[in-house]
Length: 149
Image (cartoon, rainbow, N blue to C red):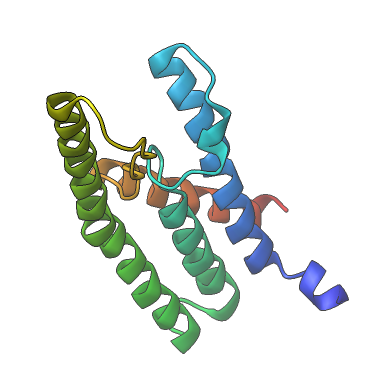
């Protein structure tokens, strides 16, 4: 248990994720001028916490195991897949959800009846900017973590 608690690579990645989630809350407040506490637990939005996590993990592994290590290579490949997925498949799914929500609402308006339905979750993926900012945040956070602590 002590080894797990002292695993700097693990904690750096998890803290980078938490930092990105908290930043989402403040960025949303800055843009919309209202608090939306659900942002702390949501996927999607600025910055990408998934990108921050996997890049912090990769940088942490690179700094501890070496930039030429197999572990670093595995972490970079996984990070690339996660970030590609966030801007591709998950973003497309969110766009589809938005269209379906619009169509369902239009249909309800036209027929003026129908069951209430909770809208589909639309904020699933990320723009390239959100992923890039998350990746930079994760990399900088990991570098600071390993050089300052």
